[in-house]
Length: 391
Figure 1 (tube, rainbow, N blue to C red):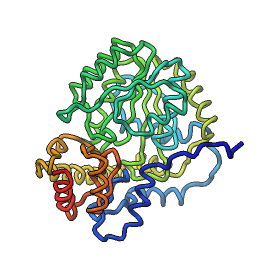
Figure 2 (figure 1 turned 90 degrees about the vertical axis):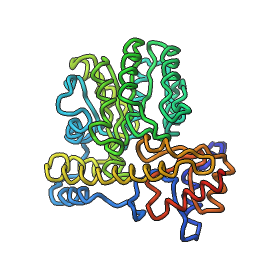
Figure 3 (figure 1 turned 45 degrees about the vertical axis):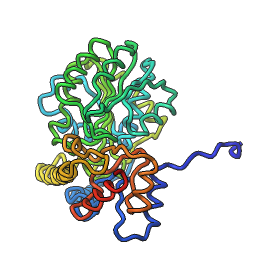
């Protein structure tokens, strides 16, 4: 039976990693893998995380199961970071720990399907795994264009998608630092989106995977908060992988907001049942480290300082790229107004291949680049290569 399976294509980014590793050119640049890198090209463990992990080693007295909901103290500790201290509907929100933001997205989509959602709408391009998750769940997907030609969010396309949607549909929105485009909704956009969703009765599924890496912790969550304060129901997936540097530890959560506190036990019970069938219990170590940071005032400050230094570096690289103006046929100026780790450059497949073969610069086949893969030491090389390849 297993011999009848069809060979699946390799993951494009994993294949790119292998190509990069095999390249022996000393000046090679990796802009493909979606992890933060320092100005020296490293992806270090946060100092605050190391301290929290040591505390965990010293204090943890059991590795017994916690249950499908995971570490609920971790889930509660994140709430002030995500929702702020004065969120009006906090009593209508419950949450669960998940294996990374991916687990959060999957659980949110599975809950939406179980609740009778007919279709989930999403802007394109999006994180490729969004569509894969929906396909695996058997959920119908509707799409609309996300990026307008001027480098801003295509609100006209979103308006049309909402108009075309049925009242029992859901819509998946990136909370901040859009992957892959870096094009976020403005505060005015979020206000309009909130009204559109309320009028049509759509269920928002919000993916907040990069809080703190765009305009700061508060501003990056402003759109999510606006939507969730105004609408009766919402689902939100959250990731600690990027803003705590816990990529391989798979630390995430899903938050479920109902019309009132009385319906939360029913919603949460469905979430727990789905989690039990999918992964039984999420991994504890990374979540416990995050909890220890957020329960300790000094460690929280240290973490926020580390996160702010990451955000500052990313935006400095964006500013430097934008200063270059037009490189060949590529206008880099819009990158200054975009946010997060990623941007998409309008390069052809042949041009992307030439960047790799002629200049040792590795990027995704979609044209997505990881801004944090650039440093002040290699950014000029990148701009010159881009000029030559696209000119």
